[in-house]
Length: 179
Length: 179
Image (cartoon, rainbow over all chains, first blue to last red):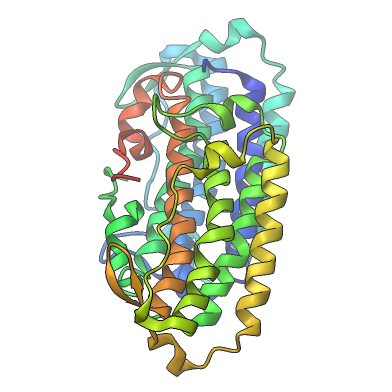
């Protein structure tokens, strides 16, 4: 499956409402629990997704179109949600994520990208040269890596409740792969 | 987090609509792709979840209440969806999953389980003695193990499109943990 803008937008537009249905008004024990010190709860994960909408994906797409490889992206702050989510409810974060994603996809469509634009190059501060299509594909798969993490964190809360079935539940044996 | 019936139902009631929002009408390249021979696509996963609603969770709960440890559960057919999903659309499967889950949760509530019921014991054909609360907790975490798998399978379709960002996307490094 090669990069396709419509396929990418189709996924990006569905993750916020899907997470909203999964998490809104669910008991807090599912959304506030994490996997131990220095790990994220579902609440933290939604805050991280919001920060990406504000500072990562579309600002980087604009930088590729405006500056190409001449200017490296600003580094992404992976801990910003600790500061930005303080005092907010999960419902507020879910609303904010949905609103920002909608605005960003509207802005993406307004760029009226053509197929030759997808090979335009930018510079990542650590990874080096990347293309616009790689950035947009990563935006979508970044949603999935955090859906993968979120399902693992929620499952962890019932790791003892399932008893011997733990042996059959792969999600309880996931080591997180660094995310 | 110990077992709690209302927490468990809260999760079980949200996974079908959440998967519906994520997958309905999304391009087929996201839902028909798998991870190679003998692996499952999102389409296959929804079929597997349907089969669990029909033959696994509530039939086993009833067997615990009626027969206790005296009779082992029927083994669960992990490949039944290949037969049962044939000729159906993903939209039909999503509708079927939502309907069966709703019926099963209605039946679960109608059991009017009390806290002492959760320790009632049954016999798993491979795992041995299990309790009703372990069965119900596993029902919920089984949803999450397949949400974890589904996010990984969808991400796999863009494993090359993301280019060097693959290094940062944990979901692309998940080995599946046997699920």
